[in-house]
Image (cartoon, rainbow, N blue to C red):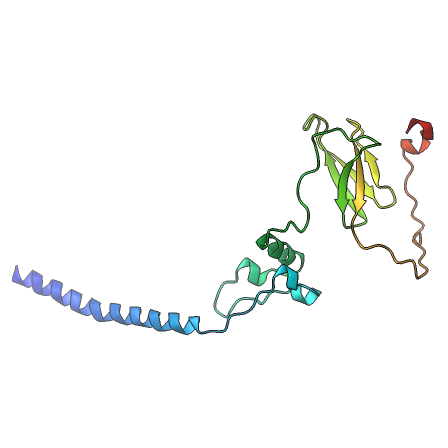
Length: 186
């Protein structure tokens, strides 16, 4: 019985110094990391140029977080979400009413073209039909249920101080049946 106790004490004695050293080393490393300079991550209101949308990256030997490695539009979206701003306006369209020519469902767009998926009125009464609205043709009607959608352009306005031929490729909007309907029926 005495020999078993001596073996147990010997085991504890050899393990104890190794354990103390690893804890001491961890404490030293922890204090060394806390004194490292922190990189300032710009807020959404501080973003002014494209270069501001490049993240600082991770410290050597670490795995970067999303905010450290994100760049461009992804970084802009993350910064907006951190401040509670929906940068890309991802809320669903108004499905509580039927869109008419007099009172269409508004679709906001910052680009020259916007897609909207119509599921009918009442909502989910037919499969999704994707409609394309452009700045030249901002109103579209769903062929299944008749809902009318209108694109509200929010992007930068064109400057008219220089001469640009906007039809320089010879592209003409394809004719649809709606082009042949008499104006009094609209």
